[in-house]
Figure 1 (tube, rainbow, N blue to C red):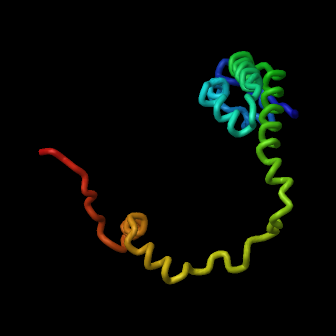
Figure 2: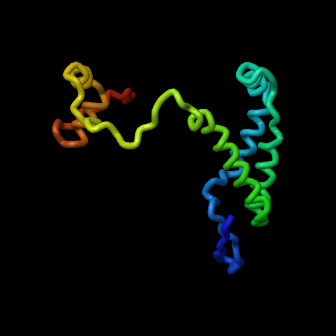
Figure 3: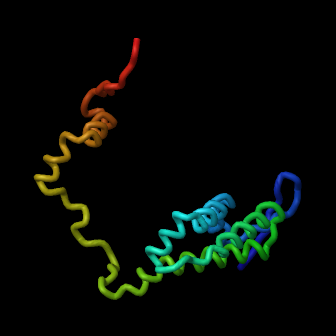
Length: 150
């Protein structure tokens, strides 16, 4: 992975990775590990996959994240980025392999046509529509009915 370096407030050189944006906060990896190992997580895994899932990758990711955050360990950061890339690839695999629906090259020509009349009528008295009109200045603001004890 291509690297650059920048300096922090202490004039120490800190490596800047190309895919550093993929690294989540360390507590996220720790929470994912805890969720994976919890009873609720194990029941969910049994239901979805038919067996328990190996949670060790979340633990490795947490350890690598801590090494990256505290010591700016490039090897740990690169392993963490590879793990994130693999996780993303697995998550999108079904979408990529889908051959049932054809993927569009461009949006439909009439993508911004007006809504049907019945949908417009249903929308007229919604909270969202009234607030939208207030923000545009089309109607005066209404007072929200909030309870107050005097």
